[in-house]
Length: 559
Ligand SMILES: Nc1ncnc2c1ncn2[C@@H]1O[C@H](COP(=O)(O)OP(=O)(O)OP(=O)(O)O)[C@@H](O)[C@H]1O
Ligand SMILES: O=P(O)(O)OC[C@H]1O[C@](O)(CO)[C@@H](O)[C@@H]1O
Ligand SMILES: [Mg+2]
Image (cartoon, rainbow, N blue to C red; front, side, top):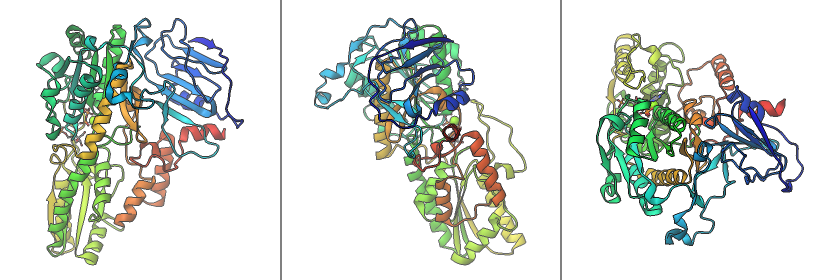
């Protein structure tokens, strides 16, 4: 690993306080081979102003006693550390491997919409913390680059040939993101050439393309689905990059979930390997909200809202008969966020079952006992179950997978309906009426609601600003309400899940008053596992600041 040290003269203006280096153990655990590009500085006022000679890294360092460690492979994580445990997990830039690219003034400076905005361009040092709840002595922790327009761009308007592709399952808001990318490119940057890739990744080499203009996409946000079509499987990196190269595409906008972002990451690697001036940008899409780091994924809000209709129907049916039970199955393969938030929103749900919280049916403290208790108390009850919950209870496990390699699940809703009916009719001799509602595809096929539409717009605009500014290999995402650029590896390294030892699940349990189905021993075990995995509140939707410490950072402070 090369080591380049840059000295600067800027004064260290920060008040004296204990320097806690959160970064080293955090970085070591994430990048054990230490081959990442690391910039350290002892000033809290990070000012990147000098390019590391010969590296082409594009990272600029100008604070006192700065040290730059350059990796020979520029696609390795770019980490900047500063005083008081400051860590920036930076995103790649085209100049990492194409150091001599020319820059141009951002055309937005002449745009009347922005000329009145004070400080419209994002400062090069602006970063967004991953954790916003800190203690007095906490290190500053991990940060991401703030998204937004830069003063200089690396593409001229008529040089840009962009493409957009949507992959994976449907999600409300896909069309809004497509629309807003096209509008942002045209209205803000004067880009006229935008191609829509038909039918997901395989569309790069097997299908037709469609020219996307503001006129073509004008009304599409009012429709569910994706006008481009989508697919699972069919990711052939070489063929995709060949197609990008052959078509002369130089900005690739890839909208999709965890699998899609993994695909985007390998496309970026191949593009970098070929030395192409092509920005690869991911826009996170997942109705399950299983993408880590970001506050929530677009379409999630709409899905939770839409799920209310099914829960309402289940409630109406259940309360209209004696011992009525309404059972609603919602999406959520590995993450129970939709079920959890739909339950919290509804107030009519008596029990919510998610993949992260194991449960059992029979015996003391089991689901059947709870159902009987609720029926006695209220005469009816509503159960919400996520599709991935209780899969371990089903005797036959399904080994089949979809085209992307995702495990196909058994229908837990149907199975559960039957088990409840059988139990009460044969074992308890209690007449119940159970209505099973499966709104799975209804909640994701709808157009996005107002709040998701705004979110999609900001995501699309941020994605475009980043590509124009020469950033690449990143996912555009919301962190604590701020638009950021997140390196692919942070998005693909793990799945976002409901942490059942965290506050949000406790809030749900106290709202429904359902059993946790866990013994004290199970809870302790779960907590230990989360500590060893480094799980914590950073994966909790809308509850990122709930004070649960970043385990990796805490370790460092106490050592
Ligand atoms: N590890 C991977 N490397 C390259 N491509 C991948 C990888 N995993 C998935 N893909 C590709 O990404 C696309 C979408 O993947 P997948 O079907 O898993 O959906 P997703 O993006 O995770 O969305 P969701 O699960 O929210 O519906 C597919 O075309 C698949 O081939
Ligand atoms: O039937 P499809 O289109 O494969 O999608 C189903 C899956 O997609 C998701 O919505 C997102 O991964 C899951 O919740 C669900 O299991
Ligand atoms: Mg997925």
